[in-house]
Amino acid sequence: MAPASPHGEHFAEVVLVRHGQTDWNVSRIIQGRIDQELNETGRQQAAKVARRLSEEAKPAAVYSSDLKRASETAQTIAEHCCVSDSDLVIDRALTERHMGLFQGWTIDDAKRSEAYKAFACGGRDQEIPGGGESLDQLSERCVSRLNEIAKKHKGERVVVVSHEAVIEEICRHADPTISVGKKIPNTSISVVHISGSDGRWILEKFGDAGHLTGDGFPHSAFGDGWMRLEGYNPAIQRPQCRLPRRFEVLQFVPRPPSLPSRRGRRPPPPLRVFTLHFLGRVV
Image 1: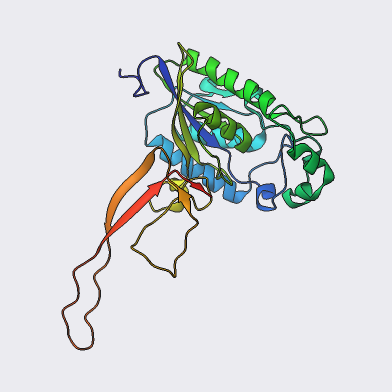
Image 2: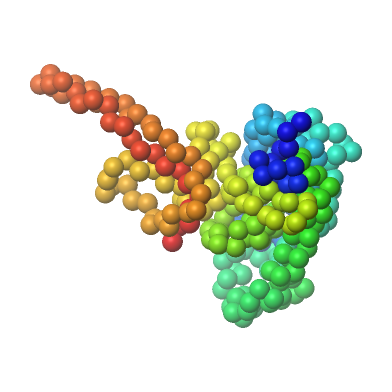
């Protein structure tokens, strides 16, 4: 059997999935370790990403954070991908970043607080007030666990269901040049190839939520970080974007032909539209 990763038999292909939506996601409340369940939209999102993954190579195992919003998403994926209960692993090392005293606050209230302003001035080793994790602590926890998973699953594909901060830190570790933008969508897919032999990490995909859009194109986690170029149209403005190092989709899409004018003139030929979806950063 061919290895799951195109980089060779020593690599594990790790498919990172963020959990489905919760009510606190909608209300923009910082969850951290507070154990919220999926809402109905989140369950539908979990079913959609599960169906997508079931059409791809079967994972050898599904790993999940211990929080309900992640474990419920993972359970749905395991069922659709025919992964046995023994290969569905609940792992506290994959849990969300502890957000300290900001857990349960709205994002806007947290950013207005003096505690946040003081915390934001610190570096990666700055712990969040109230017992929260620093970025260095988060990275050590989740990166070391993924290295262990890669060693166990050389040549195989595994799914890891976790949280926004965890996935963001994992992707930054795999590619330090990546500029993570506004948000990683619920149930979006990121893919990292990890060598179980020498510890090499390769980021292949980040924040792909095409299964939610229904258009077949991966929309990235950068808010408006995908771009469609249809010639120059001043009525449609997009944020200025920095070109990334890797592209997701490159495709030509025909524009529907124009209708004949009242004078019966021959309509112009269909215009070929250059459509580019990419992993970029809104700046």
